[in-house]
Length: 353
Image (cartoon, rainbow, N blue to C red; front, side, top):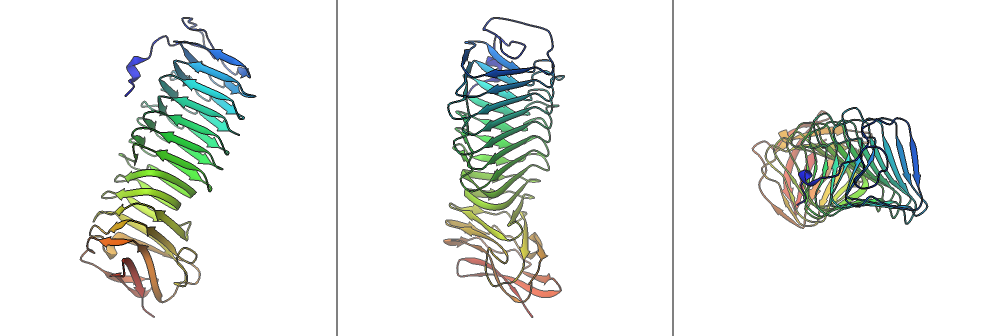
């Protein structure tokens, strides 16, 4: 694992040669790179003490650095780096920081732009709030050889992967444990390949939202945090007080591996007509083992929508079914009697007339 304490030769300004040092703040400057810049064992910093700085790497431009920052000190807010176009790359040898101790800084990888680094930090320290990374468009990639950390100490930090963009993390990745941090994966072909697994939460309010995107790898949702939407996961475990909200509001969440619930997991389902799972009501389809973990009727919050009425709702399906239901299996939904049961490798809700 790389260590944040390994960083040496930290430099100020937007682009400085190795060994240089500048103490002054810079504000509202723009630097465009369309060639090759190498700072060797030094750092490349967009916004050391200043704010409103912009770095654009475009038209096949390349930056090589030992370490990189977007917004370094507490005063350095609202700085932006854009890497755009095929062949445009930032290669960073160790750790890359977005909002190290500051707020409102942004990384945008678009139209095939790439960032390669050993470790990635988005809002790492306390006070590093509301920083954002966006990876959008086919061929755009944030490639992290080791761990990727979204909101370790800060709050309100966000990672968005959209329109066929991709993120790769070679070791453990987290959203949190700082509160109210998020990741969103939007659109078919948008993927976070979490080779070392992905953990959501550790403090209240962190969230992973899928809107047609996918996580390739195991996802763990911790207490106080939420997984929502439609898309695909490699595997999924939810701890006590973690929330699973499949659908948007209907739709299907697919788990290609195993899904393990906890007796304290919270489950939110939107129900329309019982006619077609995924189209009329939310469903979780598990291609491995579905372990119910002791959940019962009291774990569920059901929201009714147009067309709701009596019928049999296959809320969750699995290739195999494990675990038991909780002590309470019945109640009411939309004023109608409803009962949970295990039937044919599925968790079923039957709503009476």
